[in-house]
Length: 183
Image (cartoon, rainbow, N blue to C red; front, side):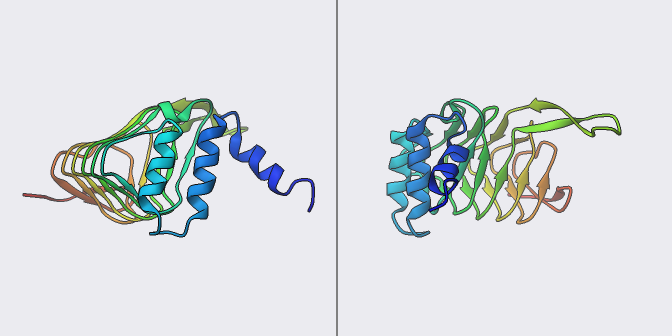
């Protein structure tokens, strides 16, 4: 096996993050999607991620960022996190109770400031993301840094959320905009 094989992958994956979390993430990704859902939740809890009772992780997910990212991700009770979801926990990510997150949702807390023409991706900036109780985030939605999605909101599949979403509102599109109020 080449020297950059498994060891190289582990070095990339670990990137200064607590090894127990990385082991939990690797093991949870090795379990087939929709099998061992409660086991994934248990592994992530054991690694220090705050996950409420009854929340299920339905497939391998990624949690990235520098340092103790497990301290910056909080997931409420009775939720559903689907396969392939990606959480950039460079800043806090707070997910409320009864939240459903679809496949391959991307939650980002870090971006670059726009720089001069010689280097457009300038200084890094981090901002927390909050997803309120009862929200539903559709497959492949992207949530950008600093966004608050208020309780009961729905983000349609494929939406790019770059600003706050009001309570009980369905948003869709790129960029996401209100489609209608929900009862």
